[in-house]
Structures are given as C-alpha cells and as structure tokens.
Image 1 (cartoon, rainbow, N blue to C red):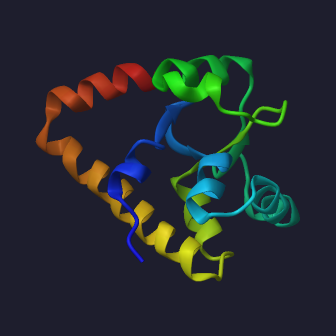
Image 2 (cartoon, rainbow, N blue to C red):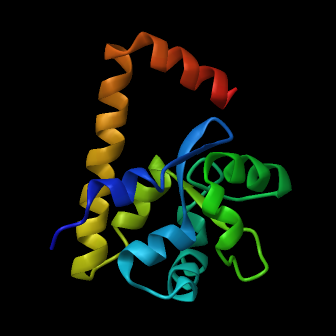
Length: 134
C-alpha cells in the first residue's frame, strides 16, 4: 500500500511552535470518517496531554489558514479541529491496528524524521522556521 509523501507533507503544519497534523487530515489519510478518529482520541484522552494533542482556538485556526489556503473550503463540522504533535502521532500509532492507518503512520514518522534531519543542513531554513514558530 503506497502513501504519497506529498500527501503527508502537505498536511504538516506549524502551530504553537510545533509541527502538527490535524485530526480530520489524519482521518482522510486513513480512509476513516472523522468521527471514528475523534471517538478513538476521546476514548483514550488520558494518553494525549497538551504536548501530544490540543484543540485549535480561533488564533490557531487563523494561523492554520495562513499556511493552507484550502482550510476555508474544508468542513470541520462547526468545531475547531484537534492538532496532534509528533508525540501525539506516535501515541496514536500505537492505537491503530488496521493496515492503512499503520502504513500512514510509517510514512508520517519518515516525514517528521526527514524534516528534523534536513534542518541542520539548511541553517537559513532553520532560522526562518524558528521565526515562524515563535
């Protein structure tokens, strides 16, 4: 099962100084309904402290829209989405059992690792990223 790296990279955002993915994007990548993922996250809430997952507020949402012009066209069911940090994604990986979500998480882990590995090679990019996440 192939997951295009671009599909993952296009869904990684910087919010509150952290690289995150939005719950509805993850559900889409899993080929799940968003409610299914939200139910899993809610059922296991104790596994997701604030540095693993947080609910976007209006400022976060505006910043998200500045990073992705398509955010306005997406439907978040009238509620702000949840953002999962790299730690939250790692925790979530341990909760999903079906083939597609497992394959998606392997790609996500590779993408986050590549991002972390690239920054030392590009000091200017690293400086610009630090400006954005402050």
